[in-house]
Image (tube, rainbow over all chains, first blue to last red; front, top):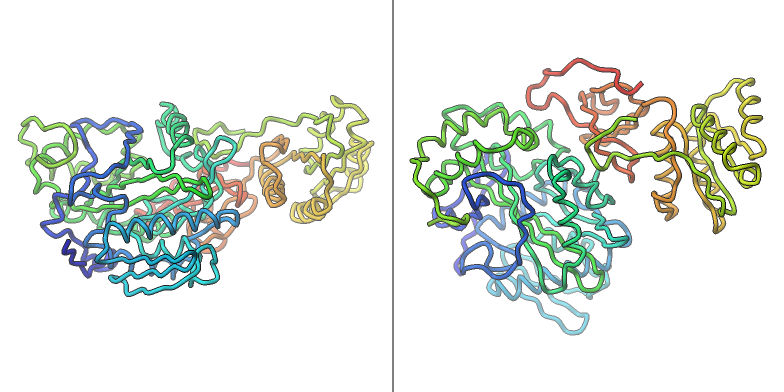
Length: 346
Length: 200
């Protein structure tokens, strides 16, 4: 499929950008002109060829550079990857799902040979060639979740299911939208969503939990979530909040189009076969406003959605410092014409 | 107790006796001891006879005498600090029999550390009977340097580890037995709201 992996950074000089051909495949999250809070879960079935929904785990031009950034985060803060002791079976479930998916969907980049429990994994873009014994963690250089988690874009958490609850008992989280795995590990579904405004009262989490407790093997689901990030920074963790929050003060009317990025998470949920746990993939996409407005439909819709956000969300997503500048920047791209339903470009 | 919209913030329903428990372990501080005395007056002496109380607080000789009398006929062990009390609790849990019920009464840090110890021994947190009494002080973890700050009575509070000024959130981790502290002036260093004594 001719992917050329970009060599770019998500910190310091921030050389990250999307190639022109990558812009239209951005999973623009707003399906209508007004913001509305909803669970918006749909089956994670194959989408159009070339779209980020084509496969369960999307690999794109940012793959190699994102994995380099993850390695830097883990070297500085090993607590970004944690698994409670009872999660080892689920870790292997995750490794199996990711390796078999990638080898099937991207055969030019990944190969998996399996002979009983003797497995051989080849990752060509990252130059990894690993023989190991499935279900024997001593044959891998890291625990299974970390070994494969260092090779797949997006963050991952694993939810144990017991007492009619989901418990976030493992995860590898290095590019999060301001939540701490180290703080949240071991919490249940309502607890780790504790800080989210409005949704608890609307019953969103109760409905979502009920739905997820019944998630079936082989029938994954997905949803889109979003926030905004200043500069294409992956590591917007609370741990480093004191280092990146001041970026918000650097936005000016002149640089807003370059600095402000819409950050979309494609979240996938997969029932795991041995552990009965749920794998939660949080695959992030970043695009600057100046790239978003190159798609006329998105340039019209984004200012309409931004203007309709309830104040609680503006605060929760910390948009207050620069929202007016963003709206002023976007205003010329909204010519008042109607937009077509759905998030995709026309 | 503060009512919070954040669902991770624990709720303490108040002590109630498990009359079927073969043994009761109760951890409390001075303020919590009053709740334990009330529990005993509701539950009767047979219940109290099956109870071991770890009273973790610094007490005068008179207080020791009075409280031991108020809490009779339970066996009362005095521990001079909360840390000593929790160490003693862990020792008891090592050899705890089936049919044990765990109780905690007093400050939130005390309850949190009892629940945390219980989790380490596979005791479901919802099975632990809890009552908040006395000080509103909190145990806070700095999300940046991971230092635990004990006996926090103000918001914001200065981290004793890295020196950042932290907003104390209501987001609570049972595993860490702590509320989360996040740098309050990260956007504009020095832009700090006045310190309020919210948790005295």
